[in-house]
Image (cartoon, rainbow, N blue to C red; front, side, top):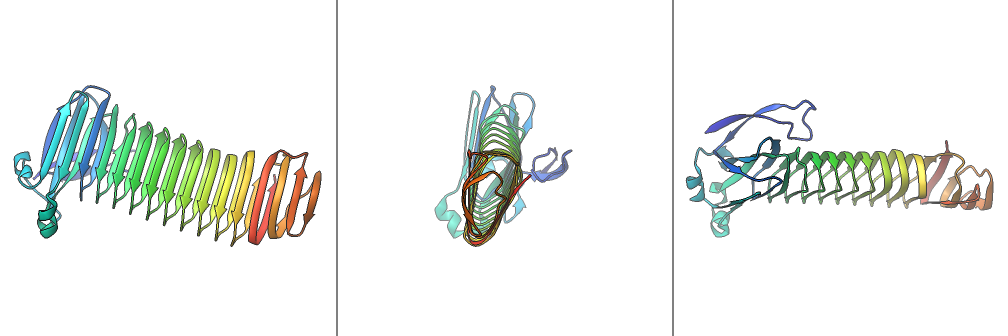
Length: 341
């Protein structure tokens, strides 16, 4: 079998100055393209790793495996094992690997699967699909799409709108310039240094967001949400977990049905909404703002300087400093504490 030394910071979790890794492959093919290029890869039970290169050529390393072992075969021999469709013209390269489902289900242990390592020009829009494998994508400047049904997704250093979806795996993304949409049904999400609006959704996992310059929508049904250093409107919702934040600038909507909500807002605009049915709320905001307060809890601790309205130990309804920014805090089975800095 062939072997190559790959120099690339191709995984999000790699150290910042890159790393080298040996990998085995079956054969390679080179495809000349005009720029900007379009790359589409579809496989199943295989990994896809795409990294940037210079020039006007896409180099594809085919990694055919059987029972976990890389096969020393050529393209003609591979096509005897499965369906390989390659379409190449102008700026476009599409590669699709498919199996005869009747044969593959009956003898799945002897089925040949195909993974890819691909060097492509940085000016490439990629569409990467696999049904049971990991996807790693880095260093491209265009719109990107990554989709797997059972694997992890790692994306880094992308300049363009990016989508990453998996049904059972973790998603990591770093250094994204452009709107970002990520979704997993059973895994954690970690996003760092994003310039653009983002939407992150998981049904069973934690969400960690750091250095976000854009509007945020973060949703999980069973996990915690942590947001650090964000500018824009942040919407965070979980049905069973805590929501925490720091160094926020903009507006915040934080809702959990069984958890605490806590953090600090450096610059508050338009609205602050925080609700929990089974936890406490503790939030600090800048002093001397005009606020419209609508607060209910088992116990309320809110300084009421220059206040007009009604208040008691369990509620505050009225205005501070003439009103202005909506502040709606509700802890039906907990305490609320609002601190002015």
